[in-house]
Length: 150
Length: 264
Ligand SMILES: Cc1cc2nc3c(=O)[nH]c(=O)nc-3n(C[C@H](O)[C@H](O)[C@H](O)COP(=O)(O)OP(=O)(O)OC[C@H]3O[C@@H](n4cnc5c(N)ncnc54)[C@H](O)[C@@H]3O)c2cc1C
Ligand code: FES
Ligand code: FES
Image (cartoon, rainbow over all chains, first blue to last red; front, side):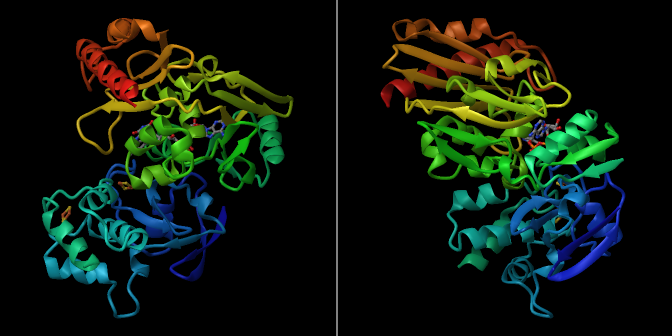
């Protein structure tokens, strides 16, 4: 079936299989591999994107449900060559090891700072509780978000 | 496979009448896992995201109407959270922010898991489920809607439209036991409410019987209530815990919940 959606501000058309996820559409149909596929069951958060401004797991959205809607992926956070403040902070804090979890965490952190520019420690932990990282032990990630907020 | 995307409830019910095999999909947090892992290949998916009648909540003659598409994030927000505090607490324990932004109470009713976290708080508040088909609408108490493990009272052509609750305003709480705070399927859960006006304690247990189950007792029998809750449960041993641990945890939760509600 054909779907048409806005991705990172651009209108995109795709020919998709009816049962595939928005994550598959983004990665395999639209050439946007930033959102990662790790669990395909909502557990890891590495596929986090904004759907109509709301933080969601792209693996749990049916591609067809995004037809006519607005999606922003990690590729859409930077402004040209200018990284998003969260991305800068991840680099500066050394919050990236293998990097597989990074896109999802960056998107989830961007969502947090948009809702709550000066988050409390509890808010910070709660906001990132749906994103798994197998490498860093999270401390550098929390440092990065704190410094982007500060 | 086919995806059908109705724009109105009437249109959606029409599709369910013509294609009773169509699987509704709202937030997709249960349905997509089945699809992604090749566990389900329905002939048709009925995408409910564009049906405005299912969204949000409203006040209705003294009570509230929760649309089937009400998300956990919405249930946690003021002023609804103050009207149904145990539901808000339960919503906070669901999955992660991403899951709470998409997952809905209608989907929780559709899945009818013994561990569905929206179910115990709605049971203690005496919620009614409104279901509809082209044949008409009907309302049934939540306790009659839940039939068994992942079984509910929906006919093949019916949809859940809304949940109706008359908020009691009574002190209440929801508690859930699991290995961490986020991303946890309840090992056991308990919603509990102390109704001084009626002289009654109402609790509902989750994850410790085939369906979320209501337990009531006179307020005067408060001392024996934790034991009654544990005795009413019919827990099983599984990968998440033993039946014995579940009964023990329920006793603790009931005592703790009662203390909180009676102090309020
Ligand atoms: C990572 C993760 C964590 C989770 N954590 C929890 C948790 O902590 N607690 C919990 O209770 N659940 C949890 N869940 C399960 C799930 O999020 C909930 O059951 C949620 O309420 C489902 O809502 P949905 O809108 O996403 O449902 P969907 O997946 O869209 O649908 C679920 C079922 O309901 C049916 N359905 C949906 N809407 C209707 C309707 N209007 N009429 C009739 N049938 C309908 C569908 O056909 C399907 O059978 C989790 C899921 C994931 C992936
Ligand atoms: S791939 Fe979507 S949450 Fe893991
Ligand atoms: S940096 Fe490797 S998973 Fe997070």
